[in-house]
Image (cartoon, rainbow, N blue to C red; front, side, top):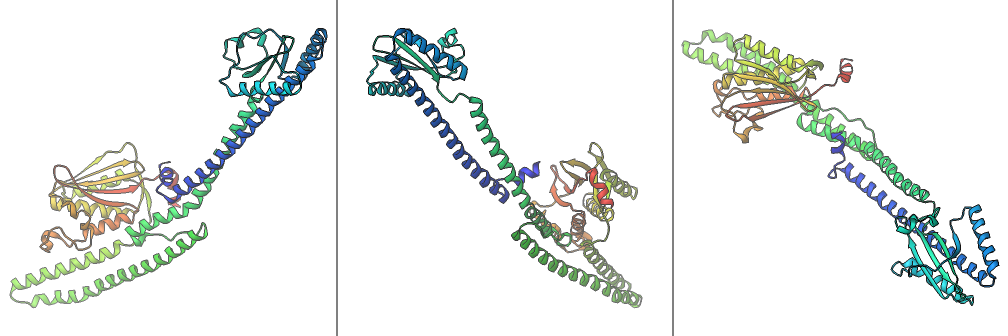
Amino acid sequence: MKDFIKFLRLDSLCGQLVAIAVLSLAALQCVNYYAVYSIQQSYAGEFLAVGHDYLASVCQALAHMSAAEREEYLASLDRSRVALEKPFRFRAAEAPEWETETDYYKSVLAREAVTEILTRAGIPPRDVRARVLYKDAPEASSPRYAGYVFPMMQMFVQSADGSWFELSQPLSVTDRRLIWRQRIFIMLESLICSAVVIIFIVRAMLPLNKLGKEVERFGANPETASPLPERGNYEVREVARSFNKMLARVQRSLAERNNMLEAMGHDLRTPLARVQLRLDAVEPPALREKLAANIEEIRSIIEQGLELARSLRTTEKAVPMEAAAFVESIADDMAADGGAVSFTDNAEGPLLIAARPTCLRRAVENLACNALKYAGGAELSVERRGESVIIRVEDRGPGIPPELLEKVFEPYFRVEGSRSRGTGGTGLGLTIARNMVLLNNGSLTLENREGGGLRAVITLPALKMAKIGEIRS
């Protein structure tokens, strides 16, 4: 989930595309929502206009009827309304106890519309009153409003003879569930469209995300970088194809360099062996000993160079292993040889990793040997941090200046500047250790400890149980 959220960050291309798509859909749905709302408002307005015409028509008819005819006519209207389930209510009424509410524009429009219709028909009303009655109003709980639809427009019209007539009609469209169902459908439509857009954008961007990870691995260790599958859209396929061509050229050049180093190392062994055989004839003995020491130093440098060349590639297969037990075995072996090496297991439960055992052992041993050499002791520990397994090799030695913590990984660089093997080594130990860690898809960093000393941190991806079978196969 964290990787997915990181993938959708606004500073990423995928996040920006998703944001553009979602905002576009949101704008489209806002327009759609406004259109639906306008249609509903227009329908409600027409609904009220029908009520106005209905009221004016009934008033015109009643104006030409006797009292008995009026009573029979109103009764027939009520019976037809009930049979047809019409929301309109029309009946004779007493004079209202309230004045017209002019603060609500629909009340004003209704009163003016009815007055104009009746005036044009030649039956001007003596008085027209209109108001909006809501369900929470005190009068709404009266039995006389039982079965009414709220909110409603209530109008009273006084005819020329002084009698009053009441018309009540819903203020908005009566099927409110239908209206909200339509609005909810619009919102669901937006969510579904957004989800589909996000899925397709993420699917289209996955090859590009993989490309970024492979480029990062290529920058750290070109030898272990893998060719990209040429899948996805046209642009991604072209980028992957170009990357694969570049990767092949770089790996070929590195392989040629490593082969050259190995060939030179092997070829130098023969003349060194000849020189070694001729040392017995060299006099005086003091000079012979100095030459022998120089030859041994050259041989050590050659061996380190060969080991550096081999550390950049391996045919060893990764296997699942328990990190704590593996590191503990290294600490026990070094302690058995007389080294002051301790081990601490800070993990809760097993720590499974997929690693090349020989490569990882050489990396940990190189770091521990450095700690023994410069600090007289090494403290090994393992723990879990999120989806990673952390292996630490710590000491209480002099440490390294902060500005050199990364530079010490460069081949033949030594913090000690005398260039003497007795004090500074060849400057390849940390380079080889990092290469070995990179061959295990991990990383190696150095940091100074509080209170003095150095801490080497190896970070390896933790292995999930579901992937063990895939690695073994």
